[in-house]
Length: 618
Image (cartoon, rainbow, N blue to C red):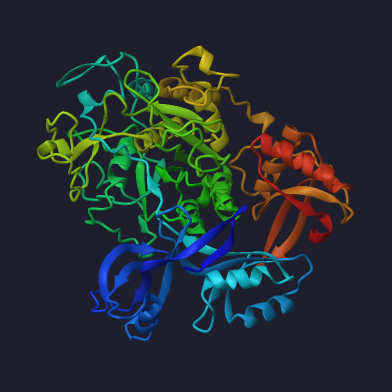
């Protein structure tokens, strides 16, 4: 079987065609006589199927199906060497041209391979899409990579990601929810836990004088949300399904049930029945349809920014070395972490994964993410939880006694035993709407709920400050010898303590001295400011942190940047789409290397930015 090698992020992927699977886009949503089996509903916008091939080989069978009126598109499905994850090309290709290649030359390249321009990112970066007259996108990307005008050509691929739920049955209802407050036992079980081995949620509620604010929205990106569940149905706001591109979420597919328990641990309602989430007053933004695709990754995080999500909880990802994050995905997460919450940054959490590995889920390794590991009801390390220097925090989950969570109505449970063992570790039912749950899938939304309590206490905190509070207020569990400079590869900065975290958020709110910082509520530049304005020569290099329409935001950013980094700031004022736009750059160095040093210093301090040649802003 022929193999193709393509660029993927910072490395390469060697692909081979599947011997049996293809992807189809059809005009009618019903069974087709040429389809043998339906394998996966949506990968990269295609349904993955096997065909009734007859005597044809797969290539001929696919060509025959492509000619049918009801079929819009057909594609081969691929595998990487040593992996059983199907890969489907979405049809889009991310192309970076070499410096100095003008738009006319770029157009010639597109015409050569019958590509349509979908989107222009900047002078050198575009997204193109194959047409009916193009070779398949894998081949096109290979052809493009060999052209001297092209620096990088990366086909957008989609594959299934891991859901980090523990595979064994899981836990109990408020008196059974030991992770909220652990008194050393579970209500209906003769089993001893370690008193105090919990997330201190009840303590946080006491400090808040309530269970959080309804002004905080938690987005949960996952699959299988039961929006009719009694603990979720009254909380939903702005739902979105990536697979069908609508507000109507996929429900009823027994393969997808993971989102329901994840969401419940974070925000299940306090309604007098069943369980309660860590932040039961929070609103719930369900984003259905996890995807490896760069385009879908951008869409899911951009949707969260645009629709006002304060917190984004993700209990999925991959530790497969073939599927590290590329630049597009890294930028999508970074953009949400900086631009969300009107510039304060969306708080983004990822599970580290359940593979018992010495490195974490590649999504969780992103520097703007809170990477959540798992501890147990004994305040010990959950042996399945991945380890690494990127681990931010750990939170109670299973590994000893499991967590109670909501169950989707179509959840068939685990089929390895009969009866309630499908849903409950000990076979004792706690109601048809619930089940035992765990893994880093459970610890992650638990911390997301705690972040909602922190923002309920102090909504002016930035995403970086929320992460800082979580880490500084955590309880060191396990052996002291496992911590170096306060950090453990198992526990991060310790087991989360919601009570102390909320107390610190309240303290920072009370001790803020407004004269030292421009108020974030400024939107029109009103107030008294000291100016020192000089004309800047359009030469040299700096670090651009963003572009702003609101003049007040420019003042806010400049005041913070000068105080934090002690460097001069340059503002470029231009017109864009009929509006004045302000581009803020830190530093103005004659040497590019000095600007790069500043960029590293800013990154280490949690401030993003990219190198900018000042002549490009003139």
